[in-house]
Length: 176
Image (tube, rainbow, N blue to C red; front, side):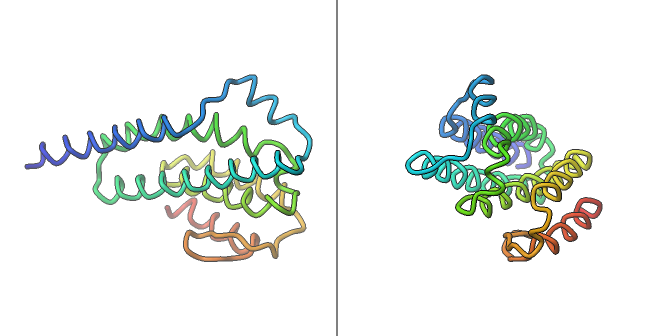
């Protein structure tokens, strides 16, 4: 029974990863670098970027559910399969979206940007990558300095100020 369960969960994980890859637009390294250098957007371009950020936030939420499930089931094979995919998504797709400074400062996307950064840190905690979590934490502090009262959705399912969320993230980093 155990082999059948791990076999079927393995297939389910593969199917979920394949679906995520199909749904995620591929961007080249050059495109990612060009996106990082762009100036603040307006009009239709801003609406498109906001939609991209919202979609990425939804993706991270789905990845979080998958990781949580794999951890709860102690599915090491599933975690081993998920980790490189997730790290690739974070490093190539997400980082390209949130790299520009303006995304942290623009009033229409700053909250989404902050939530993406906290979700990224949460996923890295689940993967036990504390050094990477610390980099994200330092980045959040630098980008949102002076805006500690801004609300974010962290921990998941709660709203806290950035200052409180940073403290919770620091504690979670070592206890996660």
